[in-house]
Image 1 (cartoon, rainbow, N blue to C red):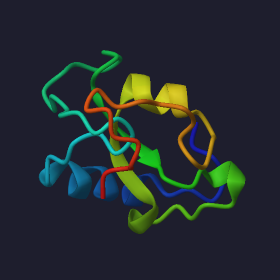
Image 2 (cartoon, rainbow, N blue to C red):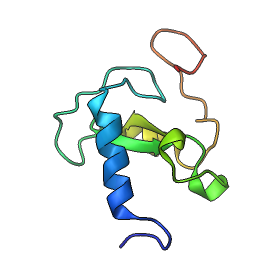
Image 3 (cartoon, helix red, strand yellow):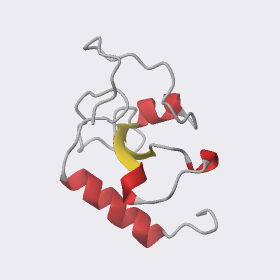
Length: 94
């Protein structure tokens, strides 16, 4: 059941807009296979950069592509937590 105040039509539009560009994961920086099935740990999900629980807006500007496993690891941490990239870079991709 959707949370009060969240519009599923807007959510679906934002998801489609992000997926069209096929960006890498905004959390780990690795490529995403956009064809993976639902509930696969590496599937595409939409992540709120600043979580709603921490005052983030439910807008396209506050959303990014992510792997399901990365989004789960980030949870509701605004900074993404201590996720290290395989490249060794600590900078978040833009």
